[in-house]
Length: 332
Image (cartoon, rainbow, N blue to C red; front, top):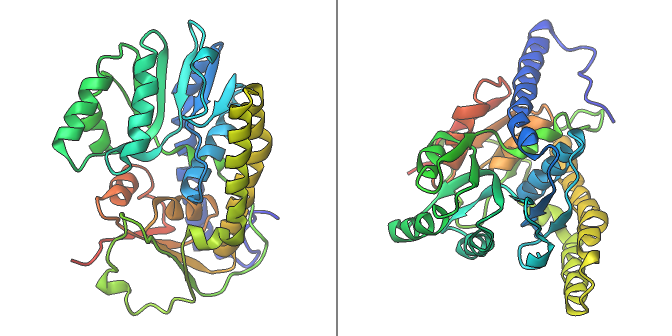
């Protein structure tokens, strides 16, 4: 396994790869401010994703890599609903998992996060890089009213649209790229893939296929849930184990469960996605983390913007200078 480029690579191709690598390495450096905020402090990593979305798992694994690289050790790692308030001491920092669920598109997740934040007005809160989106002005106003009361809430955002909105929630706003970039470079099989794979959303963020792409000969069409396949049963096992630990009051085992069971399972899921990408020469995707995974693997790809512009706003801020990626708009 390596990321070395083929011996026959042309000078022009070498320049393309070097430019892409320069962009990717530069993105990782933006997270230094987070390391500075956590140095020497006791902190909890909360709201880890227990589901089959490869994107969220890439974010989590990138965050854990970031902690490791900077010698930062979370006191606890837990889901929001298993996190125990008694674990928090004065001076502790609560670090929430990043992603694209800040808003009312995934309302229950955002509301659970709000409840924890509001329960700790005396502790510093860090929300790792997020995309903000509300379809309802009323829900946005209510959330802003709730969170703006916290005096030490630090909100990291992934794009300019989110940055503008974020000031409604806190004056402490920072523009940085997604935590999954900490995984660059991802080791890939030393072989030439064949054909095009399309990673296509089937959820509420699914876009329409652009006219310019309808004639492409796609070898494989799939989405994250299909990539994971039967291994999804490992999620159910985690949930059963977590319930038992909570039910019997064995709270000390929750972080161990996340670290020694769920993190390896997440790596297993991500390796499946890496294999799918590696088996193909190029990628077409409407998933933000389909784009990011292709970037991590130095893979040529086309990105279709999603239903509310999450992909385009992110790419225009961080990755548009990579010569390996092309952005297209969805059809009307």
